[in-house]
Length: 154
Image 1 (tube, rainbow, N blue to C red):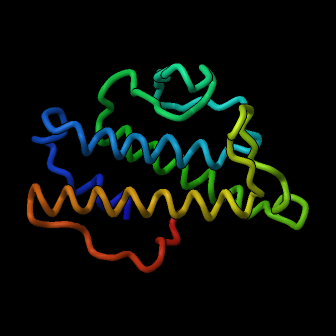
Image 2 (cartoon, helix red, strand yellow):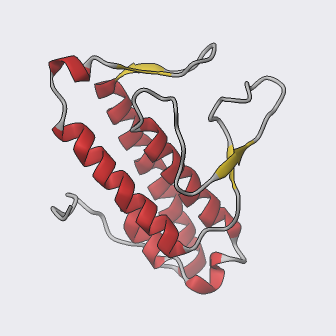
Image 3 (cartoon, rainbow, N blue to C red):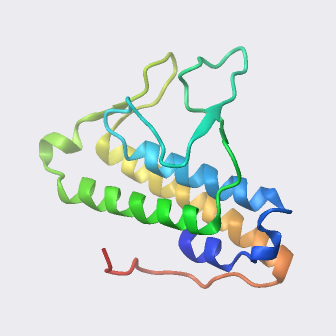
């Protein structure tokens, strides 16, 4: 559904209406991040810088700012790479790996089992895909239909 929302957003609004881009970018960076166990080192193929409010450590991945406005194709390629990463992670799961920890290295950071972070990640993507669909409905009075099952292509 995330792919369909990004694909449907009109090119003519890509550079002028940034809310859609930033939300899609945020969703993709965190999709990738939540699939990274252990959490460090984490790097994104679409670079970003951190915002650094006084109460957030410099290495915290709370708010990221893209280094530039990436193209729709770059975001879709990143989504594809993250989908492959997710598939590999799930296919490699066993009892031991399900209990590995996704643990952030700062106070009050996340500390979830692999199973928990996979569920958290899915909910995060669904949440933002719904927001992107709302933006599409508001801007062009259209949005992609419900996707009940991911395609089998990998």
